[in-house]
Image 1 (cartoon, one colour):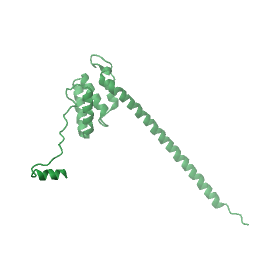
Image 2: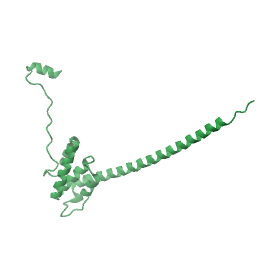
Image 3: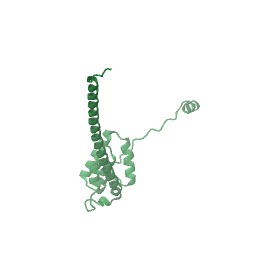
Image 4: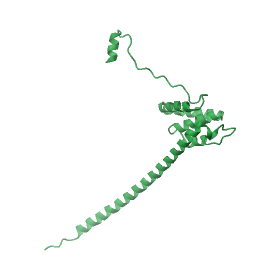
Length: 172
């Protein structure tokens, strides 16, 4: 309604339009420092990307890390693998990339602030996934047991019903 009034008052020259969302800048494999701001930007970007874009980003990060095995490239790849959904994300690989000892080739390794932030979260997530898997297996086993008991109960009811049908009723 406000748009119609605005259009009428301005001579229909321009109407208020919702701002067009610009494409997010490519931050995945750039030379920015890997820190909290990078993780926030990466997380918001991952939420809006299509599976094809996620696959492209995963490929670009893997190529960048393969070409130059720097601490920042390792952390970028690990952060992407930790935050991206399957099939592009891989928490196990992310943990392997983050949980390395400090040294010449690894930089600060597991002592880097990003690694110290992500490692406990990924390890907790892994434990939760394992607990969920165990619980789901127990549920499947209990369901099988329940189905088996139900079949036995139905068989007993059928036998009972047949016995009642066979037994002649005594007449007085």
